[in-house]
View 1 (cartoon, rainbow, N blue to C red):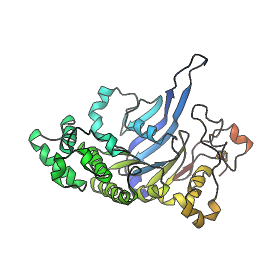
View 2 (tube, rainbow, N blue to C red):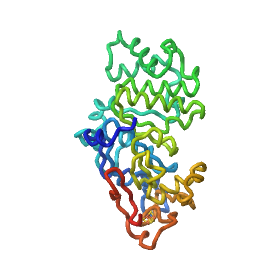
View 3 (cartoon, rainbow, N blue to C red):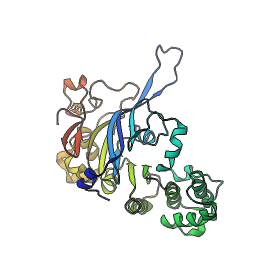
View 4 (cartoon, rainbow, N blue to C red):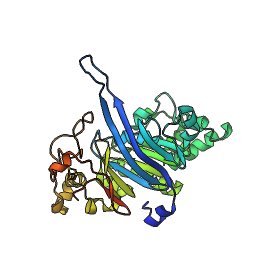
Length: 330
Ligand code: SF4
C-alpha cells in the first residue's frame, strides 16, 4: 500500500485541486439583513497521485465528506479548480461529466442506506454494468459473479436482497458496486465506522488488497487516526473546511507539527502514555462554520496562540518535500 516517494514523484497527479471552495447558502429569515453562508470547504489546495491512498481526518463537521463529494463532482464547487488528469472538471455540466462518472466512485459510510432494498444484489451490480456499458448483456451475470468473488462473497448470493446480509457483507456489496464501474479513483467516506469492531479489520484489509491489486487511488475519509496511519500513504488534517497539515501517514504520530494535529493525537488515550510530550489538549467546541474565527481559524482553541494569530491567516507552507503545515509558529 505504501507508495514510496520515488513512485509518486514519477507519477502524474490523478487529482489536483486548487483553492477549492464550497459555501452553502443558509435559509434567510425576515429579520436577517444579509444571506448567511456556511463555509464547508475553504480554499483547499491538494494533489493526490495515481495509486496513492490519501487520508483525510478531522472532527465531525470539518468538511471532509463535502470535500470528497466535490472531488467526485457530486457537488458544484463555489470556486476553485479540480483537475482530473489534464481537465479542470470544476465547472463541467452534469451531461459533460457523464462519461467520467465511471472513473470516479464512492463507497458510503452506511452500506444499508446506500443499497436499494427492493433490488437483488445481482440487479444492483448489473444495473451499474448496464448504465456504464461495461459488459455485453449476456456477460453481465458472469461479471456479477466475478465482482462478488472479488469482495469475498459467493456468487450464489446474487439472488438475495440487502436485508438478508450482515453489515460487513453489505459493505462488501457496496464495494463491489463501486468496483463494477471499473473506477480509477474512489472516495471511501468513513467506510468502516458504521460496522462492528470485529468486522472493521476485514473490510479495511479488503480495501487495502483491492487498492494494490487493481492499482486504485483512494481518498480515505475517517476520524480514526490509527486507521488512517495503517491504510494511507499521506494524510491531510482538516479543520473548519481548511487544510491545516499534510504529511506522510506513517509520520503522523511522531512528526505532526500543527497544534490541532497534536491535539487530535493527544486525544487518543493509548498514545498519551507513549507520547507525554504531545499533550496539547483541545478545549471548547468547534466554532461555527457560518462565522469562522478571523486570522487563523484555530486560534480560539489553540494552546500556543499569539495575538497576531487573530489577524494573520497562516498559509500552508512546506517543511520538506512531503510535509506542509498552516501555522507560522511551528
Ligand atoms: Fe495556533 Fe497561531 Fe499556529 Fe494558528 S497560527 S495554529 S493560532 S499558533
